[in-house]
Image 1: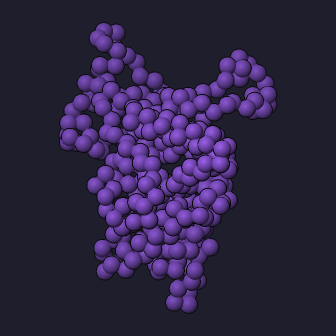
Image 2: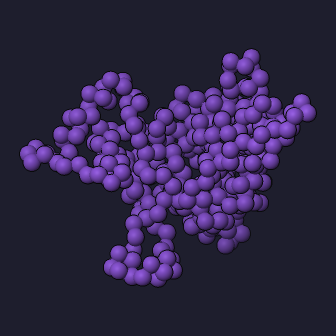
Image 3: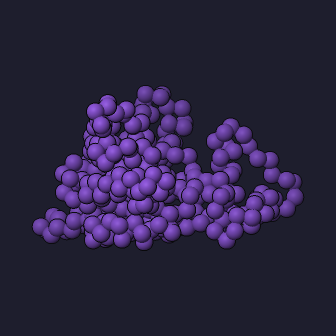
Length: 295
């Protein structure tokens, strides 16, 4: 499935200087539609100066499908709002700063993470501008455990500096590592996972004002939780990114076509959109019941 438009120091090993890993990718939160004032011809500078209040439903409207995820985000908002009110009476309602996103390859992890970051920023959980910093296993796992931990610490420091959301892509890969290296990579990967979990579940995240989200495939979800008991212990809010239905795949394709500067001409007859769904149906069928592989 496709996704809507999206929104490190190294240690030396064996006496040789280590090459610095590529920095984690930082992306802004998804922007809601422009205000009517800006679209009515207001000067660019004036439009930039206007502060648009955060509206969760506006952000959710940019996400195709994933109704379960949207309900979880609404529930999280309500919990945080109630928690702020309880704090006024001296009642602490601390919530874990670690989250889990479960979905197949190609799921809209970054779109969901962007909306989550925007929500957490609006309610004061994140202290920055709602930046999402994406870290992938190949950016983190290095040639030694020391180098790996240094790369992970750089990603965490970036999240702490931006006071944003650190999204760990394909977190399941950090459980086993790469079996081709005789298990050494697995040790390094597990060190990366332990460092990330410690940062997201301990006091460090609350003190520095950042959060950590772990994106994982459904098949690796239970394995991740077994390998990271500290993550399980804090009972993280979990977002289940369901497979896309055929009409949603068609809508994703329409949006991607528009994003690339083209448009789809609807046939003059037949129900709107049915021709596109008919075109995509055989491709979905070839991918099996999970619909995996559709991009």
